Length: 249
Image (tube, rainbow, N blue to C red):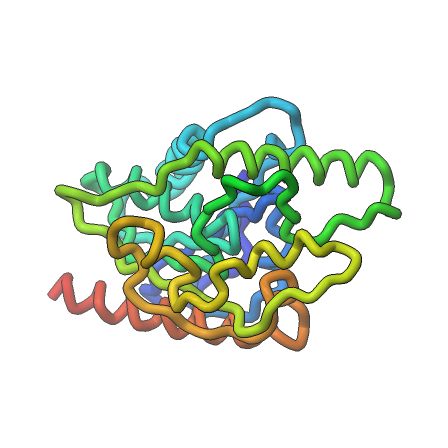
C-alpha cells in the first residue's frame, strides 16, 4: 500500500510527506516529482479497481492505520492530487484525535470542492483511452465509479475542539479543453474561485493559503509542468518545517 518514493538527506530533520492516490487508485504521477529534501511516501489502492464499495471515511481509516504503523509518533505532512487531497483532509482529521502523531500540514493539489450532485460521469485523473486494453479500461472505469460514489456521500470534516492543520491548495492556472471528452471540463467548475470552491461551499474556512501551479488539472505532472508542482510543494514543506521547529523551542 505504501511506497517510499524519496529519502531525506542524511542528518535532515524534515517532516515526512505522505501523498494519497488519485481517483484511479494509482500513484504513478508522484514518481515524476523532483527531489524535495524529505522522506516522501505514496499510498496506492488496488481496491479502487474492484466492485467493492468503500466509503472515503473507511478508506481513510485504513490509511491512518498504515501510516501509524510506520510513524507511531512524531510529525507528518499529508497531501494528494485531486481525490488524493480530499483523502488527505480526512486522514488529517482522524490524526487530530491521535495524541502521538501531529499532522503539521495538508497539501491539496488541485482538489476542487467535491460538488458532484449533477454528475453522471466523472473523468479520471488521466482521461480514459477507449482504445486501450479492455481490462485496463474497465478497471479505470470501476475506479471512477467508486470515486463518484464516495464523493456523493462524503461530508468534509469539521474541526471543532482540535486545531485544523495548516492547509494549502495548489491551483492549476489553465482550463481543460477537450473536444473528445467534454465532461473533463467539469473539473473546472470552480476554477475562478481562489480556493477552488472550498471557501464558498464548505461552510467553514478550510484553505489557509493558495498557490498557483502551471498547467491544467490533467497535465500538471507532465514534464513541462511538474517542476512547478515540485518547487511549490518543496517550498511549502520547508516553511512548515521551520514553523514546527519553532514550536519545539
